[in-house]
Amino acid sequence: MAAGDVLIFSDSDLKALAKMKGAIQVMKEAVISRSRGDLVSPPREMFSMDSTGLVWTPGGHRQLKVMGLRLYPTGVPVGDQAILLWDSVRGSLKAVALGSYLGRLRTGAIGGVAIDIMSRKNSRTVGIIGFGEQAWMQAEACLAVRNIERIRVFRRSKVLLARLSKEAAREMGVEVTPVEDPRAAVRGADIVITATDSPSPVVYGDWLEPGTHVNSLGPKYVGRSEIEEGLYSRAALIASDFPEQYLRDSSFAFRDHPGTSHMKDLSSLMEDSMIRKDEDVTLFLSHGLSGSEVCLLDYVHGRAAATGYKTAARMRLD
Image (cartoon, rainbow, N blue to C red; front, side, top):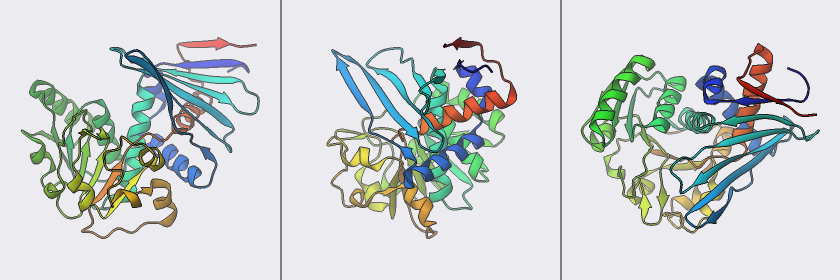
């Protein structure tokens, strides 16, 4: 790779270069770096133009000497995304990732970090509500950090549910069972994943067995939330990868709930070597830690350089 080359990664490139276990390790390091002040994580920004808009999530890493941002549109039928990576010393553009895979992998890997810290070590059963692309990544993350034996999955489309269940069982090598309703997915699960766009709760606190850990990826806003207030009351511990973003947002449904006033930063749990009680219900609220995409793209760029991987496209900037 010549100096000045900008690598352009497609989703197929990213799938070849970045696997879940490696991504989880990168996200662990990013979360720890944030607690030490090395990962710079500004709040995301956006602007609206009529019914559409553009969101950008900037960030950088002092020790890695990189910076960048993720860009994606809102309110449009096709949400093409781009992540850009710069050398923060020279100011040279190093890489561009086009497509949605890196963002999904980043979210799944952060979910894996939360599961590794917050769930019981002997967790064997996973219940998933909303079995789409994001939930698939969360399932892969569960398998990367726990000895999972069975996964129960629910989504509203029975045709898609049946097909995806068979694909998941074949690719993941564990028992994957489609179920008729969300409660059946949750019943007896050690780990519960909610990854929906539902405006009303799909899981309730009183459904959970003692010791259950929940990763929530979907909406949690006033008048639109996939989890209900009872889950916050039930949880002995609530954490997020980006709690400031939630707690400063007036639209966060449970900002004034007593449980969320003590919401932990995921990085603080890693630094404190948290020990959970077996009966504790724990809750992780995924929000998308800014700067983490930059770290993951830097990892992919390094893998491509080390292995001599040839991307389909590159630019020469002089």
